[in-house]
Each structure stands twice: as structure tokens, then as C-alpha cells.
Length: 82
Figure 1 (cartoon, helix red, strand yellow):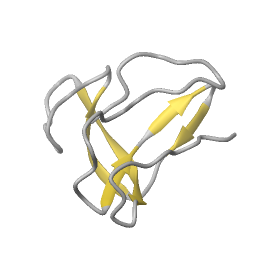
Figure 2 (cartoon, helix red, strand yellow; figure 1 turned 30 degrees about the vertical axis):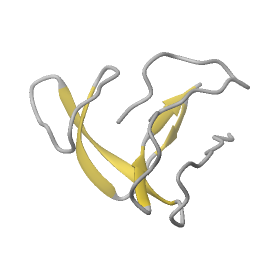
Figure 3 (tube, helix red, strand yellow; figure 1 turned 90 degrees about the vertical axis):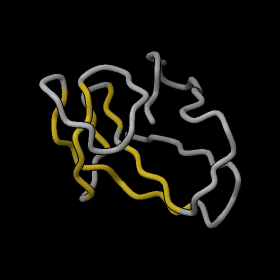
Figure 4 (tube, one colour; figure 1 turned 135 degrees about the vertical axis):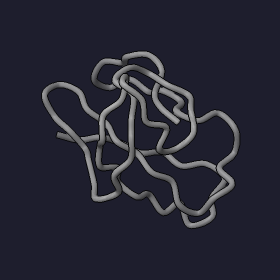
């Protein structure tokens, strides 16, 4: 899953619309010269996307994603601070 569309500081965006069905989700974010990355590497396209994990092609790069434990909640809010 990915954020489709760019938002400025202080803005909100739904990344995944339906209720979360897994305890663990993964994310990677970049903006304003900052990057939120982690140790879970997978192929990720250069542009906004909606495809399954680790779909590698010539339009992707290998990025480290962070793990988010939602504790079984059906939704979660993540705030990116510099």
C-alpha cells in the first residue's frame, strides 16, 4: 500500500481505506528532505502505487520499511515528525 497524492505539513491522508486486518503493517515515507525508513527491505516503485509486496521491476527500488504494530486495532494514526 502507499500514499497516493502529496500532502503538505499538517495535512492528513488515508493510506489504506479498509479496516486493518493484521496486527503488523509496514511503512516507508519521505518528504521535506526527510526519510522514515527501517530494516524491512522490499522492492518499491518510484511513484505512488497499489501493488503486492516485493513486486520488482525496472520502475522500482529496494527500500527499507518500518514495522508498525497496531495492537490489533482496526485503524491507526501515524504522525511523521521531523
